Length: 100
Image (cartoon, rainbow, N blue to C red; front, side):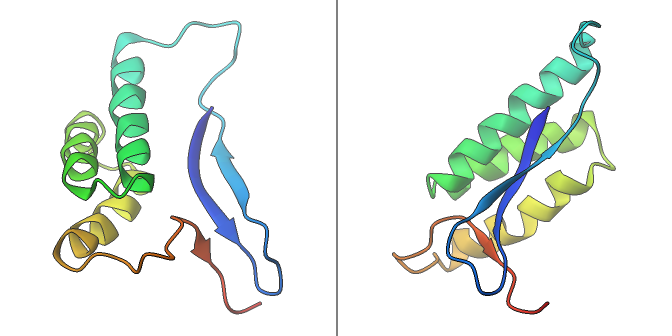
């Protein structure tokens, strides 16, 4: 399982984690998937910690392993933007959905 993101829906204050099921617990992940998840998780951690340079580096490695992974692409664009223009100090890394 990997964390895709944290979201806050309209009208709620508490964020919820969004996960993707990667595989069956009883079957070990192949080395390629383990490597990908390592870099993806490192990117998520750096992103949430506001270390956008490190987040970009980790996500770019993950992207080389899985070029079509949508979650990687979803994080890269804002990471590049935040690297140029950091988010406000109140930013908590959670996507807030403002419409129903």
